[in-house]
Length: 257
Image (tube, rainbow, N blue to C red; front, side, top):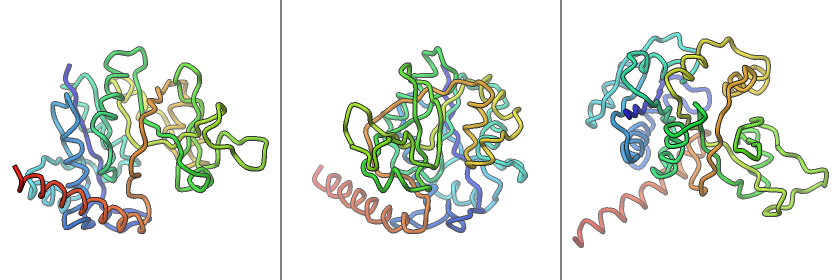
């Protein structure tokens, strides 16, 4: 089974200008995400899909692979689909270019959920760690059915207990934060991008709601929490500290080998 991992990366960004090329711990953010994607077990090819020749040059400078795509794509999913249309892969991974901390084993769990079936789309979620995350509109929440299917994604605090304050860690939890990674079969990805934007998608500005409204099942794989991705400007400084610490620890290990 051939697994293709695509990192959609565009130069324009509403919250962080030129986000893929922002320097984090001395390297472009796209390089850190590329490195994380390459560490996923069983991935046969990793490629950056972008509308920017500048991003292509940056990726090739660190030894990665990048392809130019159309500039008019409405979403990263559309960009991934353009790369996947050659039909060479059995499973396609949409690995967000601003997720340098994704654990390789967690991504493999999402891949296996599609490779084994029965669902054709999967994604990741982690337990929310505090009430502030649950209430934040920049954190996407998800609720799922007992069989693991996604029921709804929202920027609002869901599920919302009738009590004034949620009780974290009770049997009614956990409240889940969605992690921006998707895995599809080629057929499911083609169906997704052929759909028009949906009403709920427009309201929440979450494209995965388009798939849910159309009746596509999305499997939610719950994995242990890790550092979140890069979404707002203050995340750059946090990621810089974490990645510098990781880099320094790695260098010390290599020195003592």
